[in-house]
Amino acid sequence: MSSYLNELCRFYDRLAADSDSGMPPEGMTAEQISFALVIGPDGSLVRVEDLRDSKGKPRRRFVPAAVKRAVNIAPNFLWDNTGYVLGVDGKGNAERTAKTFAAFRELHEGLLGASDSAHALALLAFLRGWSPERFATLDEREALLDSNVVFRLDREERFLHEAPELREVWASALSGEGGEAAPEGICLVTGKRAAIARIHPAIKGVTGAQSSGAALVSFNCPSFTSYGKEQSVNAPVSESAARAYTTALNYLLQRGHRQTVRIGDTSMVFWADRANPAEKVVCRFFDLEPPSGDGQEEQQDREQVDRIRGILRALRKGEPLNQADRELDGGARFFILGLAPNAARLSVRFWLTATLEVLLRHVARWYADLEIERQFPDSEPEFPPLWLLLVRSLAAQGKAENVPPELAGQLARCLIGGGRFPENVFAALLQRIHADKKVDYFRAALIKAFLCRNYPKEEGIPMHTLNEGDKNIGYRLGRAFALLEKTQKDALGKVNAPLRERYIGAASATPRLVFPVLLRLTQHHVTKASKNGKDAYEVFFNRLMGDILGDMTDFPATLSLADQGRFMLGYFQQTNALYRKKDADAAPNEAAAGNDDE
Image 1 (cartoon, rainbow, N blue to C red):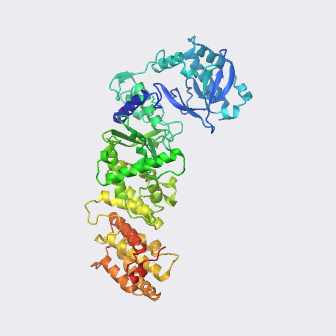
Image 2 (image 1 turned 90 degrees about the vertical axis):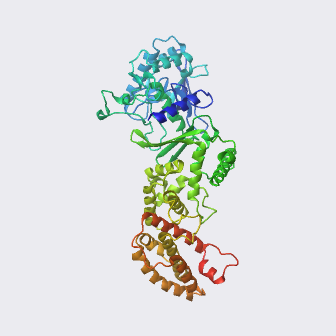
Image 3 (image 1 turned 135 degrees about the vertical axis):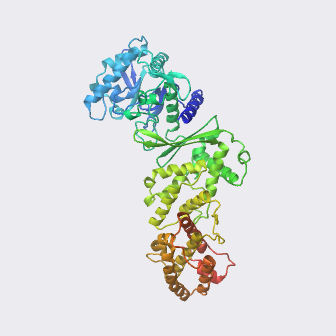
């Protein structure tokens, strides 16, 4: 645990030292704020100031760190939603709303009651004098309801939470001064003795997790109690370290952030051990399709995609990174954390660390393993994004919401970690092919990647295009099946149930039961195709089938899963070859037999 928490804390310290980084300072978090309540020195409400952008969306602002809450009542300091700040919300529970407003007022009475600051006195006067019934008189009440608000003193530019004296109050509250003392212990992250956080701040932005946030470290059952230690004292992390790693994660998990990739239910975040321009481009390796549009930002993205494609092509040829791109620091160490939702908690799908050069070589190898002849080069990407592979290959009905979530995370780890292709992902892929009766470019590419990764020393290593010298029985039977299907079409034209839809699953799994029947049926197709004016069709068919099956005297009873994959690959590549346009000097009869473009 301490490994990734330690690196997140280091990342936080690095960016917190840079005021332009967008990382919240110590004790602060970035929250979506919509309005500011501008109050006078006497606590009167002067006006409601709209802080939203031109599209009416709240802006991300640094405010005192948010408390963690679910069904409990826990107010934030100097900001919150209208249920806490004004005693009005849209949830329909007036009794609870009255309690949230009372809790907000009580918190500020306790923290600011002894302060003689003009800001503190104005806020306390407002809270003592405000009545929730006055909300109905506000012109902004519809947009204001349930939104997050902050405070500003009239005729001042800064917000109350930015006032130095109130920031000191908040710092004292965080350190536990004047409150209940937190238990002390040795922090697993820093190795220093410090106050231990009993509850860690919430982490927001993980796909599928609760919108209010989820916990990466938490204990809430008696069975988790060990040696009398309750809650997060079981895994001692100091309060400052807990705030640092959660702030860093919330920073990385922002929507639209360039250091986050979401695939299935897995949210991956990337960062480096030192400032590196590649931090902002690593996510692009998961989607190398150029954006549409003519704006300046889209143009910059297209240039970035072209640059990354060039790097990957160079690495596939074996060039070192410093030759492929001299601006990137190949020795920089990168960290990759994969998170997935688990009720109110988060689970760690994977934690990987590698230098930038190693990481990019893993990505380059992934695309090299996927590389295969495309059926439709104009519409099929050379570097297919992982999300598109998942949708087109593993999702029922081709819908993104049907991608099995655990498979997405496993495949993402295979891509960036350079390890074996997950066997269960491959099994799910074959099941999808059997269900859909379809082998397209995306599925064939994944099959090729599986065979390249998991069976690199097997006879018949998959190639980019048709390999007529491949002697693997599964690959040859797939090629034969493609020829049988082509012959059916040449004889009968388009039919309601071609061989692929009726037999491809059984032919790939139990060829001995299916192929004798198909070969007898095909004799009629060959005869009919010959009568349809295709001279020498039977000669062409027999020669090609003989080249494919060779000295095969019997069909195997079953094929292993790997050989079923080779079957599908042989079928895909042979089909491409049969429908590929012939060269101008090709034999006329051969072209007639094999060039009915769909």
